[in-house]
Image (cartoon, rainbow, N blue to C red; front, side, top):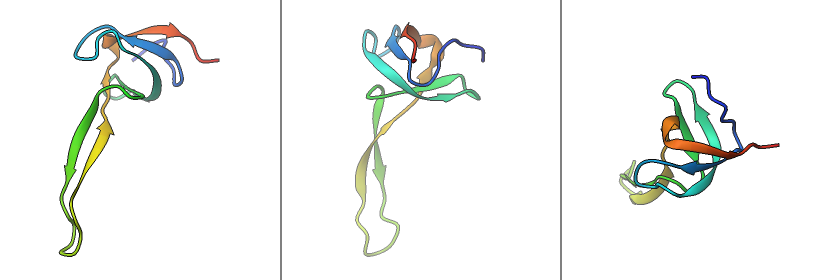
Length: 77
């Protein structure tokens, strides 16, 4: 993957469910050509209890999106 997008850049989502939203790149996953963006593509994950006394819980997790679905707005300094 050879992109001009780096960690900390401001981007705009140009395709998909979050089209038109703005965010900041927090992580780049080069293996899958994906990026993780703050407060975009948040999914709900249900965690089962590990032991008898524990309780399960619901966790909000940011999931990555493909880099072709975003557009660079401003570069990080």
